[in-house]
Image (cartoon, rainbow, N blue to C red):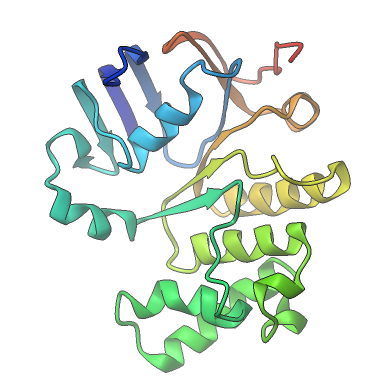
Length: 228
């Protein structure tokens, strides 16, 4: 499903954010990516959804070789994956329904199909009653639920979540994790970068720990393993 083969990423300032990464993630896995600040977690995530390109090495996601992908193909590739960000990245002038529908409109789905699917995912994240509200009228947890709904509306095989609970209070964070776990139960692969020790230790999944751009730990049912 996702494979990194001997991947290096060196930034212009000389920082080696990926230093020989070799990782395989199978379809349907739920994987936490953990590590101290500056360890290379965000670069790992950005490499997978092709915001960053490796300096060398091979990255294959769902049969697509990202290392050789032309820039013009990136938008088409991203339609096959869902991405959830820490800061939600919702369009402020569109309501909840429109934010989610937009992801289907760009791939030219028909209006009837869009309405059916958007209402389906709104129900999945518990926001059916807030479909006509603007992002600014929602709490942070509700905005993140909209972000998750948008990420899964096109039924991607993989969802990449970059610190999805980073701006949320503990109770809301658990609610978001329940939604992500439910999505994973349907067979969707989840790759989640996180600093949340409590969640990683309580809801156990595979843990990949990165330090200095290298995988230093890879455990099938691991714990967080850091004090910070």
